[in-house]
Length: 526
Image (cartoon, rainbow, N blue to C red; front, top):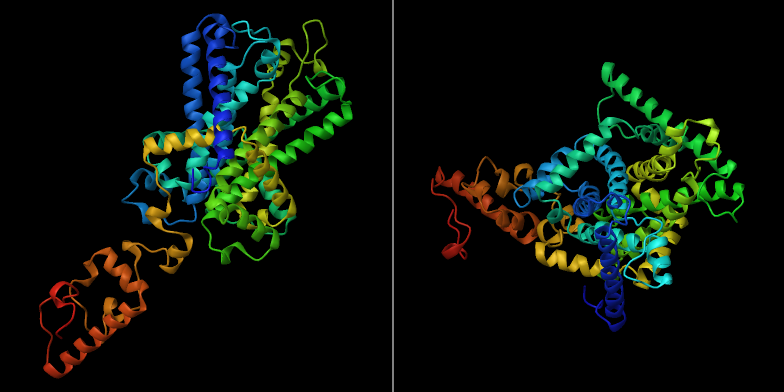
């Protein structure tokens, strides 16, 4: 934790949250070993544990990778080509054309799939009991899924998001991250959630703004293939919406019986909007993190939001938001799952008279996951990625930020900070500023690197036809100093002028390279 975050209250939060996490982990593994989860009930407990951890680790990389890829998008990848070669390899493709949008699309659907594997492996069956635990413990930790929520949030999502939000370069500088990135690109290629692109186009048109054309317009087969996948995705989404709303009005979902059917529908779309705002906010926050204060605009809501995120608690409010956001999203998903998951018994009539096989599949709740993925996640992320500053410029974003930070302040998921600190220490992660400086520092240097350095300075580009031998291959630190320090720049210009005068009066210039340091610091002979 950063300075000022080790007060007794914070340490207490870390302690009790970590205890809850350890207890939840013990319970989950106990249920798997006693064959009381969805997958282990058939007897393969060790295979279930293997799948559970494989899914958790992959989920952690997907969640943290998003923070890194989005946050690094405004930064020229040439700045870290040598220090982080794998990060550079990913960014070289991710920052080209619309590949970042493709990654976000595939990543979100990938998260749904991986979380399904986690829940299938570790989620307790309805009759689960363990080690003669009291009934209230079973109700709180097993029946409500609280233990799975805590473990999945802290281990599979939050701890990597915390580190990746401030150590973006180090986090993705590995081949597991590269594999995960290409996996998300492939998922997008399948087209299951391509209707999100059409929604993004509609939003831009309603706002009266042109969509940024990141790639040449599609033509011929590429255009046909794109719209075929959009129609395919639209068909699946439409069916999922129709069958879900029909089930709500027929009272055949797992929604609480005391909630009126109309209220269930309103609650469904209201929670989808909240989830969408939270999904878009994280994209906008990471995108704005690397912008200068001038680039963030002058809207009071945007400025207040940025001040909270980046200027307070030593910058820890950004990862702190991720913790509160995850808790809020998980809570919303819990209710949305109740609204959308169908509950039709063997002796009941199927929703809209569909077949028994299809009804059995819908009872698993996949249609709700698809609806949530397209309408409450990806579409909002695409819009926020296109207008990150505009997304911050409204009171709803500010209000939700405050709520998320309050939830994080309760400390229920502070174990994620403990895990993140352990992970950071073992992996040796460092803040991005160590490698590439702040946004203001990069701007003062024009965000240029060795291969693109063009400086309007006679000492480097030549003056009156005179070039200073050897200076173009001088150490990078010396050239940076010459570029950023006016006094050094003026000195170099004077050297160039003196050499020019010497060439004119003396009829030539010595062929020996000019000296810029060491024993000749105090005197330079022309």
